[in-house]
Image (cartoon, rainbow, N blue to C red; front, side, top):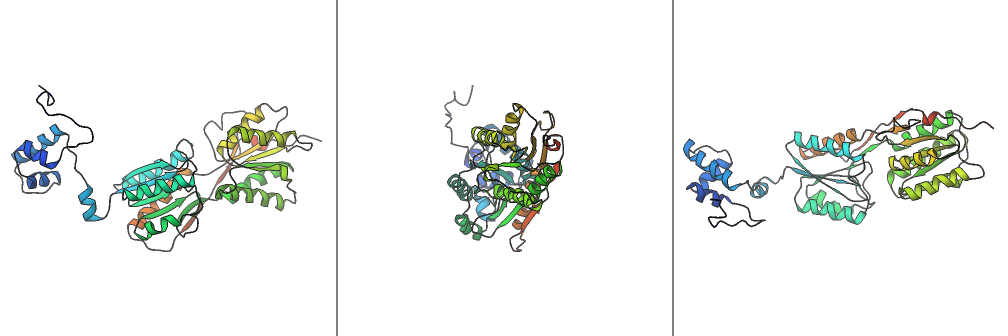
Length: 346
């Protein structure tokens, strides 16, 4: 006969308590507490009865009281831009691995590049008393986090710095990577190079644009307004920008794409273009080495970003009280073929 048949009804959201375990095992609450917390003073037979009751009821220890005593939840929050973006998969996994090595649980969520949603998610995690946060920011004003940081919530920003507060941040060398990409195209004979990037308010987009302009200026090359397009990375917008650059009276002979989503759309545009056009993309992506020609990229190590940020976070939680740090990790140019196509003769 099942428990339900005996009259013990099940209600979702109602979990068994130590009182239920004590009643089933025929012992006192203190005895259950000792077994649950691994404390001495319980005979083997009594411990066996308590463990059998725990198993039968599906009891799980409620850590809320322990949290109140210790002031730590052994959990951290990770706020990403887009969980579907392949750039963030290795980053999230690396943060989780570091958290697990410290006995902590990772809770993550996506801001969908919406500053209001970012703030709502961050504050919801703080309300759940996470010990620390790793944040890829969507907004540019993080003063709302200042009281939480002051209250002891360790916070490290990744990929983009915090806005209007001083906080730890781990970045890739966006400027240097972009500069190297464009210099690579120039070295292969290109003089008219287009840049298609992300929203201009985003730190990474601004830094990559600055790297592009610096490389062009260092080579003594002008930059026409029509060669630069910043905005959403939606395929329709990127396709329109690339098509316009390639159809101009003096078309660009090479493209530098500002992130992996832009690069994927650029590859589709160039596939149907009647003449070869060089392409270098910022961010590596799956299958970039299998298309023809294989895509030359500026690779940043998102897993290294995640490990570095999480390591810094746990050092803060361990009591390191240095001023906020700004760590910048190098990028790597990977020539594969698309960035080595020369301009058309004449």
